[in-house]
Length: 198
Image (cartoon, rainbow, N blue to C red):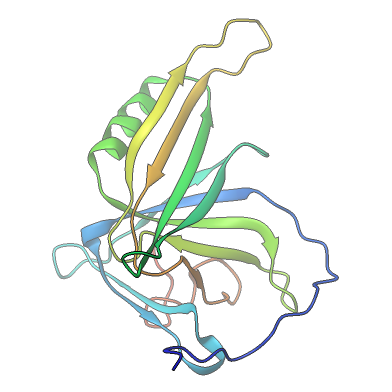
């Protein structure tokens, strides 16, 4: 007897989409009190994020704008037929251009902090035209475990930061429920989550 019942098939998608990541939002892992996964039509979506700092003040998301065509996310399925296990390893490869003392300090802090990462993709939701936002590290968090700080060699080379964040999760990454006007404007009990950006 099968332990899971499939619920639907899938046809060929005739719509064209765009790859890549537009913005990365970092949340400090232990400041995300809870996330709620939707049911019914919202199944597979995060419908509420409860964030708090020291139990009272609202916590923030930290938004990083990214150069086009260099940052990516992925989720690798890791299974063992012999052991009957399966888990997922989300990864975010994040690139910042230009070396600065301010970014040096932030990179050091990111390396010392367990985070949850929200990636705002270039892909858009059919019907609303809003960007798709996915959540990596919802259950166990994401940590920076690799990267480089590069000067470049030739005049046309990029200098800057390349960072790899990874995690291990029981479920594949979730998508965040569609927003009303701006990202995360209806997700924390129906209010806007504070976002810090440059």
